[in-house]
Every structure is written in structure tokens, then in C-alpha cells.
Length: 114
Length: 112
Image 1: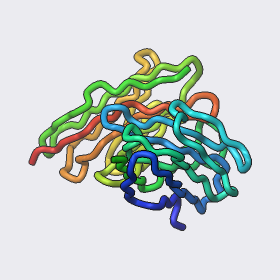
Image 2: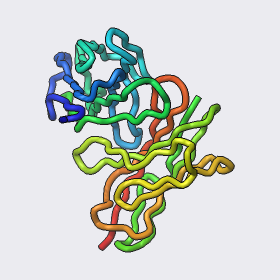
Image 3: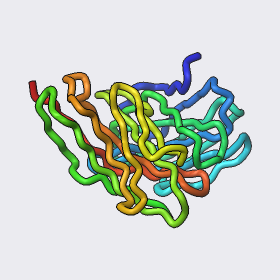
């Protein structure tokens, strides 16, 4: 049982390049999330998926797209990377949509955009 | 709407001293509250959560937190700090909808 896994662990991009961050969970969770973490700002929600086939914007969606490929996988795409997207990206999952449920986090992807 | 405020972005304590990390929340409905810990270069790990079953919540690694509705607080404490407690700590609130709201984090340094 690996929990939430993310690839790659680290990536360097040039401005304007594109890339996809991958996330998978093996806990049979319905809800999945993408956050970015920046110094002094905590975690901010980019997009989330309440169930397979649905996605919704979070607090900071601009410059990103997501795909809920199936119940296990939730990918985050940067179409044209900008230096402002340099951050640490975390994927998380939760069993359902009840407020009481815990979110479980992956180890993160560290992205540097030059 | 929900939000969380963590007072003190950096806290330093001596090894063996009391750890107190502050969290105040704002919520228009009864909230569920969480404390997460993040060790360097790792993801977030759940320490404990408040689910309304008891106001004093015990978590892993000797941490506990007390929910005080009158003060809208959910402060994290540990009686005796250990070097391995050095990490970033995040408070989060979940009330309605499908989102968590995180505080900006508190970095804990333990001085030997």
C-alpha cells in the first residue's frame, strides 16, 4: 500500500515549456486534490476532483489544467510554464467529500521554472 | 467561509521544554480541525484531528490539541520537546464543501 505517489520528484523547466505532474493513489479514494506550497503562504488549492470524471477550480487555478484519468490518477498540467509557477506541488486524496475526512498527501514535486 | 490563522511563523524551544503552537479558526458552521506535520523535503502527515467527539484530542508523537469554541482556537501542545519534533506544522479547517483551508504554517526549531 503506497498511499499517494507523485512523479517526478524534481523538475527544472524553462519559461514557456510544458509538463505534466502525475499523481496516483491506491486507497480507493474518490476525492483528489492539487496544492502548491510557497514560503509564507501555506498550501493553496489549485484544482480538485470530487469524483472520477469531475474537476473544479480551487483558489489558484490560472495557468494550470487537470485531468482525472480514472479513480486512481489525477494529473496536473502546466501548458506554458512561468517563473511564478516555481513551487512545491502536492497531491492529496480523501475518501469522499465529508468535512470530517482526512486528506492524505504525497511526497511532493519540486518545480523550478527558469 | 472558513479560514485559519497560525500565530508565529517561527517558534524556538529548548529540548525538554513545552511546545505550544497556536491556531485560531473562523467558520460559519461547526468545523473539523486538523494538525499536520511536514518534515524537510517530505509531504504532510496527519498529527491529529478534532471531530467533535472530545475537545481534547491526542495525536501521534505525544502531541495533543484542545478545541475551545469560545476562543475559536485549536492550539497544539507537547509537554516536552524532542529534537525530532523540528518540522513545519500546519493547522487546517474543513467545514463545508470539498475543501481544506490551511494556515500559513509554523516552523518549529528545537534547541539542544
